[in-house]
Length: 275
Ligand code: PXL
Image (cartoon, rainbow, N blue to C red; front, side, top):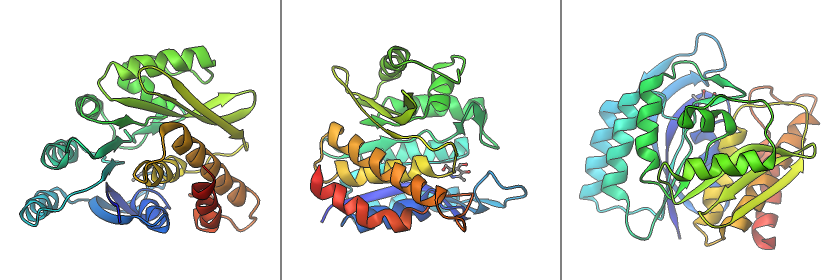
């Protein structure tokens, strides 16, 4: 069985980061180790959330895992939230990256033109350093503009998106996948491997939920680690994320803070068989 390690926070309520990555990747038949980097009462879109930085523990966990000689087929880095945690993520990559495994980095720090609570310049600079070492850099368009130091626009055409992907590639990753890309009233993602572009677009619902980036990246990671190519993995992840949004949108009792990914898991497994 393949093994992924998911490195991000535990938001106890909020359906994002570890509470999304663990069930989704496990359901795809992949062992999911977690390295929780912090624990929050809720994700940062709520007021008065608590935040416990687990940096002291991360270093000890890395040391133990090295002693046990654990290896990972894919390293998935999500929300980190502090520059101290990013230093440890950098160290984790140095310790566990091999010739064969895949490192996916979601520079989770902003959306819709706004930074999440607590994000600062130092964090952005450290993220840029991490970009140099990863196989897949997976920002949304706001995060792309922060990494590139360019202004965020609400609308981009596909030629502009391709330019952004090329600029992000210059930061050093092997591949770039940008999410939240719109085309003809649809929404999806654009991938770039330095030669070709891959994209897929699905129905756009006029709502925005937290955690959709994490749902997307979890499905992407579970696909890539099982040898799906970039094109297929983007299709699987966009179709699955859209189905999660649809189910939430149509559920009058649905949460406003995260998506009904749980009920879309049978569909995800169907997509894995199809693509
Ligand atoms: O889904 C991204 C995310 C992850 N973790 C925390 C967050 C967010 C987005 O707001 O606040 C703590």
